[in-house]
Image (cartoon, rainbow over all chains, first blue to last red; front, side, top):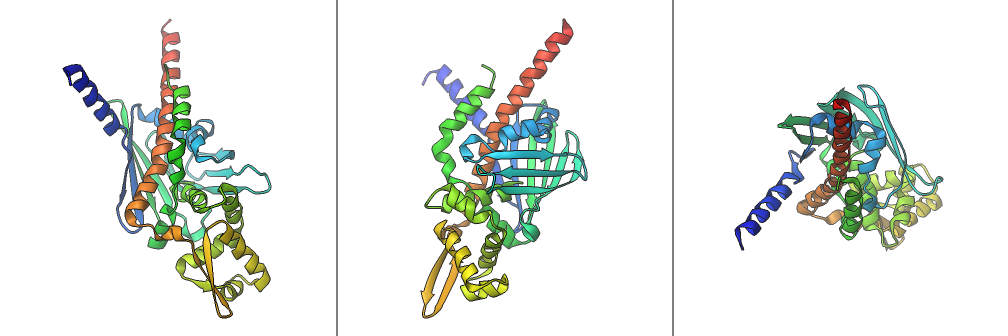
Length: 174
Length: 132
């Protein structure tokens, strides 16, 4: 391996560390997800709080689901409602309200489609040197509710990485 | 909706032998979601479930068979009692739990990178125009 190759390998490793998504169970009822984004907090917040941007990434095409509608009023006390399904007679809605919204800093919302088992999600955006550390916590009312939530999270994505690459290639500046 | 919601959707996909639509249809109904929640707490007979949800035996049998077709529930008949339990997907271990949870967010965040890149590019464009 010559020095150029080595340098490239180091850069690639740093790059993948940088974009690494970590998931940790903080307790029986809480899961915390972290990820760093190469952009200031206001842009990351914008992508989370404007429905037209949010729907571009929340359901990557590889999930194989159709997001029929996406209504979000991202401010403290505001509500959201996401409706999924190909067939208008057979849809599934996800909804809740924003408990606390501080622009560029924090969004806290409820997940009410599961009734009493619904979690409260807190996302914080911490900017440092033009990059943003995102910390997302999901706090469930009970251990059982948390166990239920992790079950079955998309193994099927593996097959469709190709689609995702395509999507990203279309969005990134070249 | 967050990982909880999306993993519920994904649960349907993963556990469904006949594809996404069967599971989607199975979970689109509030009673069937209730039945799954109930079975998550412990096995139950069709009669138990019918009582719990104040429904006829025939009605409950229909709901259970939809869930069964989608692979979300298994049933076993012993004597005259048909016992229902949550499908095999629930037996996953902690590690697998986290791996899947992570996968949901990983995919989303990869797509979010794309959206953010686009925002950065637009902002740069606007900046250039202002300077002119």
